[in-house]
Amino acid sequence: MQDKRRRQTLKTETAAVGKFAVVGVLATLTHALVAASLLEAGVLTAFPANICGFLVAFGVSFTGHYFWSFAHLRQEGKAWKSMTRFLVIALSGFALNSFVLALWLQLTPWPDLAGLLFSIAIVPALSFLGARLWAFSHRPAET
Image (cartoon, rainbow, N blue to C red; front, side, top):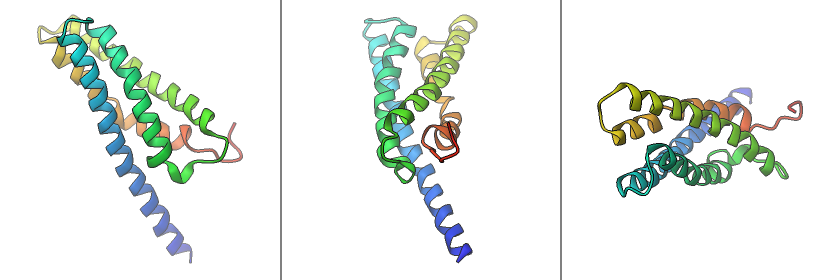
């Protein structure tokens, strides 16, 4: 019985990783598409375009993770808590993204668009760990 439960847990967690990846790719593409479009159209420079892309992608990401990736962890009345925690994780990832972008813009002669896309791509693995272990996990002992 214990072995069966362990296999089911492994199956559920593996599925969550796959779902997280799908939602993450969609959110990352959203971030990149919005930011790159604003940058390339000359509407905004790299940093403001990056912020706009992040904000739109956050909505895609939270919704997908809350209702699909981590649906097995979802508890009644915890949506606001999950969103607040996920926002902390997303903002931390965005800070890292912005730091990398700033370094790129200051230290390389390469195109701003390449730096923007590179900086967006480095955050997903850290975001998964924070989302799974904190943002969407609500054990009774947690505060």
